[in-house]
Amino acid sequence: MMNEYLRRMRLQLSDFEEYERCLSEPAYKGIRANTLKIGAHDLKKILPFALDTVPWERDGFYVTEEKPGKTPYHDAGLFYVQEPSAMCAAPLLDVRPGERVLDLCSAPGGKGTQLAQKMQGQGILVLNEKIPDRARILLQNVERMGVVNAVVTYADPETLAQRFAGYFDKILVDAPCSGEGMLRKEEAAAENWSVQNVEMCAARQKKILACAVKMLAEGGKLVYSTCTFSEEEDECNAAWLIKEYPFLTQEESRKIYPHRERGEGHFAALFTRGEGERSRLRSVTASADKRAQKLWKEFSADFLKENLPGRLISVGKGLCLVPEELFCLDGLKVLRAGLLLGEDAGGRFEPSHALALGAPREVLAKKAELGEEEIQKYLRGEELPSQGGKGWCAACYNGYPVGLAKDGVALKNHYPKGLRIR
Image (cartoon, rainbow, N blue to C red; front, top):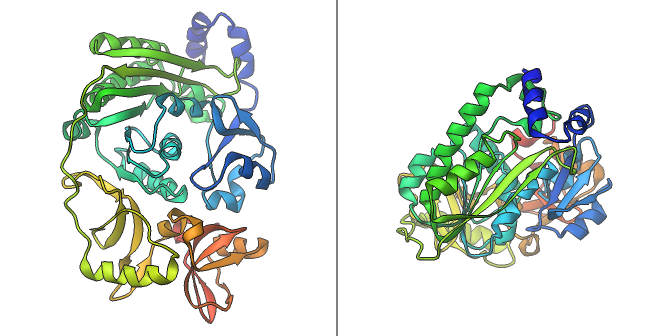
């Protein structure tokens, strides 16, 4: 298969020999500062490894550290491990606070959380992944990064297109692709490559794009991106899009090759739609369970210094804080809406891990600061000595929350079992 792939690339690239040579070189690695929690400059000062700025994302950095996610600052959501060239797509959308934004193929969440940072907790961000297991991974990253204005869904694009016709100001379609930009990172990408797979991906991408266009408001922007080099999936699909939908205009595009720029490979194209009105949807109809709301009020008076903005609604057993302008959730496959605060656990309020990472650290009234050895024990799920407090608190590392604990005779560990270091 690789011989056929290289033959195609030889026809595509005038500097093919340089590309072929680079395939035996190490892959580029990167991280992106989470500006919902920390500025890029401040992150650079506290991380124990060197950072070099990515040119197309001011909050992105190249790293040579083999496993940058091993530091507790990653568990605190201060940064996202992301391949550098993958950071080029989201900035093209020029997302602003207060907008309605959709990331249609969002898992594992790199680009979606990148969009969230620009929204600064304002507006509606829908992050969709149709495969439930991948959607749960997406949700974990959304919670870790402290995104509070997202709705995480697991619906197929056709269903969403029927529900959200003309609704979104900005849409990102980072479509499933043949993954030619992953060849240096993942052996499976080379093993799974075939001309047939390229053709299948190109056809599937057209269907996804057609759904995205239906959801784009007049005057809105759409970015189509892939991590592949095939012209069928990249330039040809971009040309198909403007031919099929004459009201779209292609504004710009970018293609990153690993032998030309410092990135594994990415394609991104920006399209705009003519000015006009965006559609409206019925507002959320869910309300907050009265007992759960009362328990939250009592709990938050002790746990927080001030109230968090938003609207309280009950979703199953959980109590969520959602944007005031949230649309109706009825009939949607939703994993999470807004910030999960916790739930009524038999007459007492049980706070969620998401609350510790989603509430601004400045408003947390009760904290337990953990040192170097203590944070490692905490992340393994071990119990720690009491710090002399009482009740729920945010377990912090150098002032940044990583999860919840309950102080008393001992500091009881409430770090989620699925996230613990093994």
